[in-house]
Amino acid sequence: MVQSNQKLIFGNWKMNGSLEKWAQFSKTVFAQLNKNNIDLGRSVLFLPDLLLHQALQNNELLVGAQNHYFEDAGAFTGETSPELLSNIGIKYALIGHSERRHVFGESIEMISQKMKAAQRNSIKPVLCIGETLEQREANKVFDTLKNQLVSLTSQGAVGECIVAYEPVWAIGTGKVASLEQIEEVHQFLKENLKNELGVDVKLLYGGSVKPNNVKEILNIESVDGCLVGGASLTAESYLALFGL
Image (cartoon, rainbow, N blue to C red; front, side, top):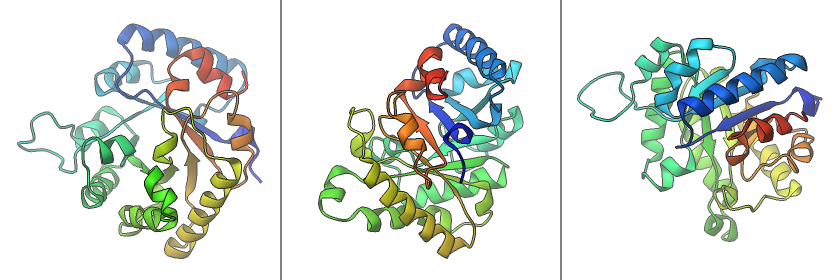
């Protein structure tokens, strides 16, 4: 069994931050993780695009993109090229985050194309899936998740993917799924992915994860780590997720 102190802590800054804030954050976080002999591979920070180049200059903390387009180049004004992300050294990208699905209207088909684009450019995708409150109340949780997993199971190179389960109703709301709900869904996902793909895929949990609840969430055996939003925005709260 993987202990909670060996599990992944990924942070999603969303549309927040600045060059100055990242400089201070990265210096403090790197120093503390290094001082406490914490494997830097357990941490990936998903930053706004305009911070990525600066973040890669010191290259001490792993960083990833929050999104990219499914074509490598072309007449797509305002989009981000996965080929260019790979070219500057990006190894991870979030794909299918609930805000991309529900605010920007990304379909399962588009998300599937983005998965292919990430993998052909040697970027490890973190596929985000999750049900809305309406879908949960209608007892459609497993059907919804299985449908969203098509973006992964229809692709190859599954070993180069991480799945993040984020119930939409628990993202940024202060509501957290119960430990029983998290365990039930993660066990379902582990079994489903194992049956479909024949391999184990790392599973993260996200949804109002804070320093005061992260330890008990990480102690669930089927949870391989957490994807954290607001609690990743300051060095103090992010380090607290590691127990520091």
